[in-house]
Length: 220
Image (cartoon, rainbow, N blue to C red; front, side, top):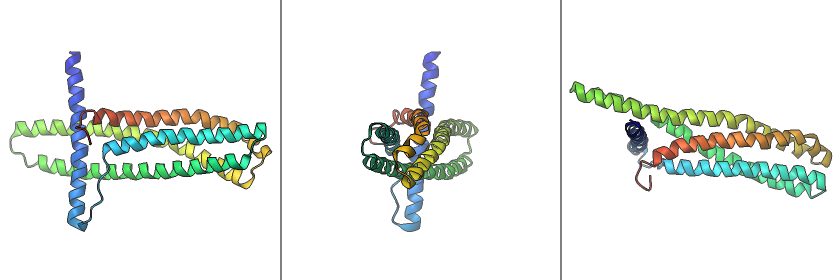
């Protein structure tokens, strides 16, 4: 019984993977017909890579902020520490924009692909085949929707975290002094703590994508 359940789970992920790949292909063909100069679609492996980089970048940004906090206590160079924090935050924001663009692109393709698939299903005249194809479509859609749900959870977690990081950045840009840094010590501590849950949400999303990629040939 467990074997059957495991096999069904694998098949569902495979269907989801096939849907994502076909989804990307559909978007590419449409772009070729319209512009003749298509932008290559982002692969799931590329998205997973960027999400891995995002986890690292979040950790490095909060580490640089914590280093600034410690600098206010031991009398080290605050400007050097702030400059490092500033650079890390800029890199984090740039990476978030890249991941956001890929997520938006994936959602748009999903909508187009769902419509195309349903249209093709309507052309099947054999009732048994049409039912099987519909079931496959629903399984694939369910698994892809799980990725979207995980992405939404990560977005909700990341939003407040980034808002506070930007506020801290603005506050220190206006007044980079020992007293200023010490005055937001609790905020910095909270951001370090919050970063753990944000990284966890991103890891969960990456896990959903990884389970799909495990069923794909190397290079996808």
